[in-house]
Length: 212
Image (cartoon, rainbow, N blue to C red; front, side, top):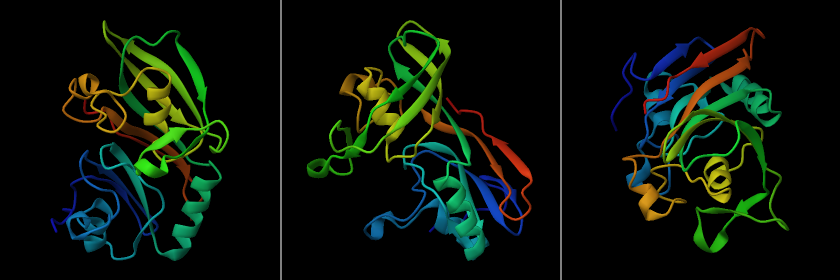
């Protein structure tokens, strides 16, 4: 497994947590099977053996990824994510021109069991899911959006945007083939995080410009 170098992808480290910048195409955590063991969390653990996972990023998504150091910090940070005390912002480029300047998508989501790992909108059985969006730039056939996932469902941003008719460019799971072909990767990036330090309470803020 390739090792994470001392500076590659590392934005912040202390004795309590790490903040890494995950490239698109690299798993955040191990998957099923021998061919899916190389991932950012295991690379980080080669350097910081006490590093522990507290949240996820899709393999196709790039951007900010936090790891706790030690069990106590893992519990504290996991609780912060669960209680929505961590502010997360993403950037995406979607197909088509989005009407308006900002808004909210509130569509319940659940696993599409016959087609795992796909998720789907389901008004009857889905879990409440909310995404806030704001237009950053509009071009002839696409729109750059700032996205705030109020909830943290699997594939939430990807499914919500596809559901309102604006799939993310390069999305191999939810976009039609012609929209997939418009970008060499999923144009979704975790670009900003704000949280309280789990040991000191200090306000922390991290940013990673979208690489597209």
